Length: 83
Image 1 (cartoon, one colour):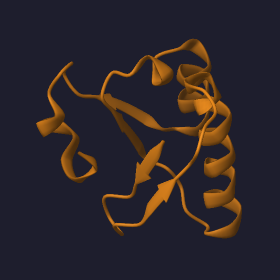
Image 2 (cartoon, rainbow, N blue to C red; image 1 turned 60 degrees about the vertical axis):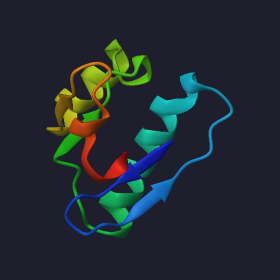
Image 3 (cartoon, rainbow, N blue to C red; image 1 turned 30 degrees about the horizontal axis):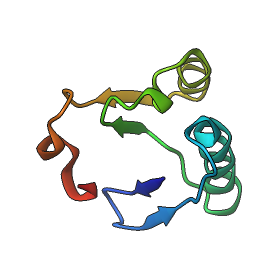
Image 4 (cartoon, rainbow, N blue to C red; image 1 turned 45 degrees about the horizontal axis):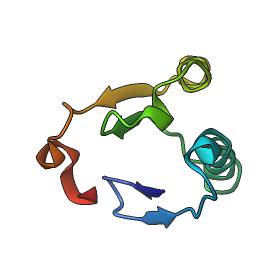
């Protein structure tokens, strides 16, 4: 999974064994960013991948004030620099 900060252009590559590990890896990265970097995730932009469309992610984003932003299916042009 590649996570890209649009503001600073910093990129994190997280290696996952399976797509269902996405939530735990994202949760761990959010904690690291908050504690070590004193940064907060404001918006999560995704390509409608099913790994980000579930109840766990919705609850986590709502709890931490993260705005989910999904691009239209099969339109990599909307995903900015990540694509």
